[in-house]
Length: 308
Ligand code: 13P
Image 1: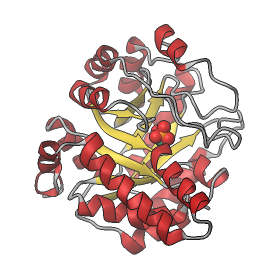
Image 2: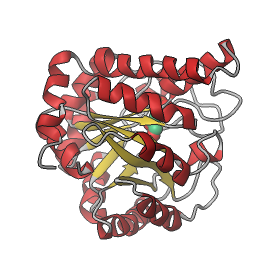
Image 3: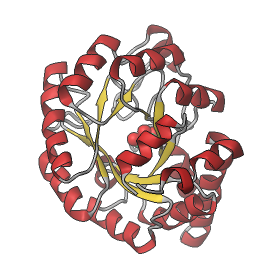
């Protein structure tokens, strides 16, 4: 399967590809098994923050674990959030990470220039797109502020939503997509990331809402598949409506990370138990929360994987 074909076919069918984050290496195996056992098509992904601040170790280590268990009919390997400037406002050598990801066999990558000015974000993203396309893989980018990864305390969620804080601007999105040539665009329209800062990452994530009209306007303006970050803890109906509006990939991190970490708190050292909890939570997310049976039937590899 090629990631670009899979996402475009999902979009054409009005479906969505889930992408599950790997903050801890033992999560790779149960997530792949859950995806295959649900007969779904989904991505396994890791973001820089997960090897810097959690225990994913490195992008190469995640790729190594992925390649042990990969299931080519059902799974793809994606590099999530490589920030041009990170959540601590440090510059990041994104070019080197992207090249390492290509060498390690990642099938798609993300550059995150969302903390930069529009022009800088376009410049950095175009540079990342060139590296990805040279390797014949697609590149996701981000415009707007999907909050939650910062170390500072966020305003109450309802305030963020009501004031449309950080929402991706529609006109900027049109310019950004046309000039950066990114393949998929991560947008902000009420979605927020689960916290990653050590002191707050165990807290329950606020239940986010989505501005579906805004997502539809962004899709009309850009014409490329949209990506919904912060997929944990959004009401199911919002997600289903967002898929109709233009979202073709949804990132899920906190929900499975907390499942794994809480299981280890319950039974310290019992990795097999924590893996089993992740397996069941991942199956549950695919089957009951994100996709009903009808959606799953349409997203299976007969439609999306074949010929890709
Ligand atoms: P959540 O942790 O909120 O599910 O978000 C994951 C994500 O968007 C990773 O890029």
